[in-house]
Length: 246
Image 1 (cartoon, rainbow, N blue to C red):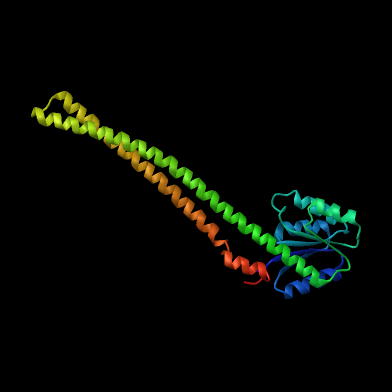
Image 2 (spheres, rainbow, N blue to C red):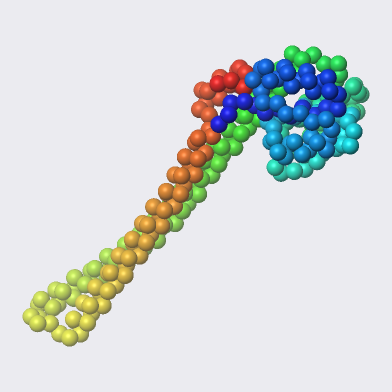
């Protein structure tokens, strides 16, 4: 898995695109750029950025319109958006936040401040992602526990039935032994009980096989999630430092 955080810069001013592209690339980020909202929407779908730097006043589609579109999309609603604007009006900022903007910076801006805000948002998103992974693992464990309980309940019931059949079989054998050659009826009962035991044994084996298959499937999914998980000590280290580096 790549350690580089992906940043999409959307701005109609070439000088801003060049500045952010150079600075963030030097800091180890993976950078993509777009000159307007329409191109930005297309790049978002293809690049799948970890964060979007977005100008508000742009041709074709404004920053607000793009934000509204992305936040309404289940595939992209969780991407943090930092919006730039030359407008310093409180109402404009409030409108942006209500649309789903995660942070708002007024031009002219200081790059160090922008970088600090970006790091905070990336760390927050990373923490949220890890919480989702842990939640998925807990959900899997709970489902597995529920499935195991249901299977074991059926297993125990089958075992009880098997024990009852075995007891009847034992009684039939004792009766045959006591009578010598045995009676035809007793022989038929013995065959019947043997068949029951065989059937119940097959049911038990099926329960065991189903349970094993469920456990194996859960183990595979658990391992897949584990590979995308960060240990808590490492996560804490990342939250204290640069999210781009290990």
